Image (cartoon, rainbow, N blue to C red; front, side, top):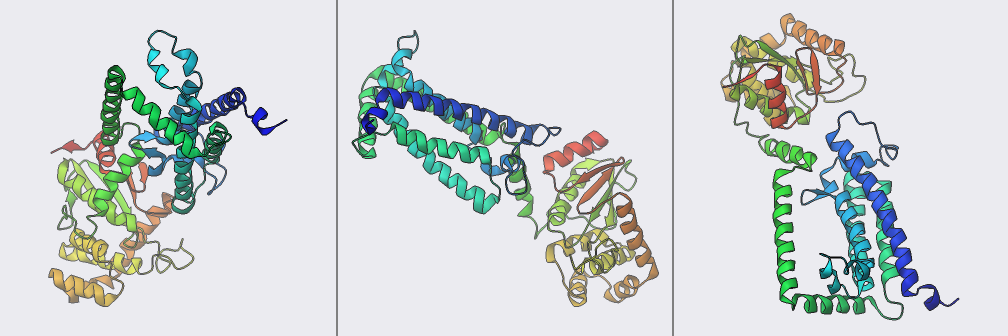
Length: 403
C-alpha cells in the first residue's frame, strides 16, 4: 500500500476523530483532577499521583496549570472539541443555526496548524514542568504527543506546512470579507476578551493563583512590616479569642506570616496573639537531631528577654526583617531600637528565659508540631502560610470581630 493510499483524506479524518476523542477523554479527566486538587479539600489523590516527580495533582495546584484564569485542561478540552467540529463542519453547516461553519472550507489545514501550535505550547509547558515545577503530569505528556500526531496527520502529503498556513490565511480573509461573518468574528473576539478578563481578575477558576498573588504581596513587605506592633501585647490584652502562634526566626515563611498576623491584629478585635517559640535548632530543641535553622534558639532567647523591657513584638519583627546571625548583630539591632542591651544580656542568660523557651518547645512537641508557622485556635491546628483573606476568615469564624 502506498503512503498516499494510506493517508487519504478519509483515513486522515478517521484517525483525527479517534485522537480527538482520546484527547477529550484525557482532558476531562484532567479537569476533574484540577477541580479536586484546588476546590475539594477531601479529595483523594488521583491515580497519577505516583511520587514526588510524577504527580498530576501537584502540577494542578501550581499557578502554571492555568492561562488567563482558565485551567489548561479546559483549554485542551476546547481544542479537541474544536478539532471535532472542524472535521464534521461540512455536515454540521446544514443544521439550522450552524450555517456559519461554511467558512471552514479546508478543515485539515486548520487542524494541522492548530496541532503544531498546540505542540509548541506543549513543549513550553513541558519545560516549565520539568525545570520549574519539578513535577510531571503523565496525562499532560500524553496530550502533548496527541497534539503533535494530530498536526502531522492533518498536514498535506506532498506540500510543506507553509502551504497550510497560506490556506488558513486565505480562508480567513475570505470569511471576514463577508460582513455578517466579520461582525460575528468581532462579537466572538469581544465576548472572549471580556470573559478572559473576568476570569483573570476574579480568579474564579484559579484559587491557587489568587493565593499566590495575595501571599506575594506580603512577601514584598518582608523588609518593612507596615503593621508592626509594639510592646508585649498583640491584639487585645483581654481578647476572648486566644491565638497561640508557634514560629522560628529562621523560618522564611514565618517572616511573611508575621506581617499577616500583625495586619489581622490591626483590623480585628476580641483577639490576642500569644507567641510561642519553636526553633528548629538542635541547640535547644531536642527533636532536631542535625544542624538546621542555626541560631534560631539564640534569637528566641533574646526575644523572650525583650519582654522584660516591654519590647517583644518590636524586636520580634526586627529579627524577622534583619535576620541577625550573631550575638553582636543582635546587640547592634537592640541598641538601634533603644533597648537596654546590658539588661537584655542579663535577662537572656536567666533561668526564667530558659524555662519559658523549654516550655514553648515542649508544648509544641505535645501538639506534634514539626514545622512552622503553626497557629492553634480553639484547639484546632493550622499549619503553614495562608493568604490574608483566608487567615482573616478563619479568625472571624473562630470569634474575632471587625473593628
